[in-house]
Length: 83
View 1 (cartoon, rainbow, N blue to C red):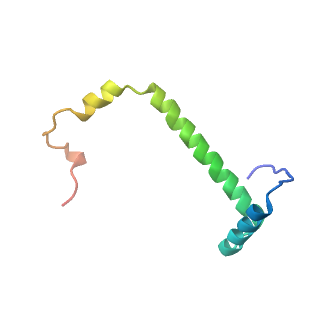
View 2 (view 1 turned 135 degrees about the vertical axis):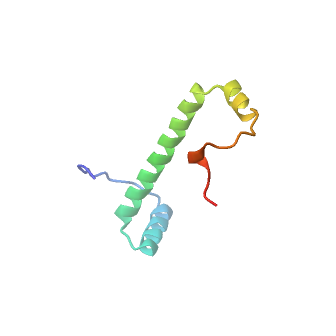
C-alpha cells in the first residue's frame, strides 16, 4: 500500500460494535477490517461503473444476431476438449 493518511471516522456505536466483533472473529484489527471494507466497496462501485460504460457501447442487435446464429460446425482442433 502506498502512503497512508489518518481520518477521524465517526461511526454509530452499533456499527462500531458490529465491525469490532467481525474483526475479532476474523482475527484482524478494526482498522484493517475498515480498510478492507472500504476497498471492497470501491471495487464494487468501480466494477459496476465499468459494466455500465461497457453496456453503453454495446449493440443489442449484434448480440442477438450472434446468439441466434446457426451452429452445427465442429469445433476447431485447438478447441476440442480432451476425452
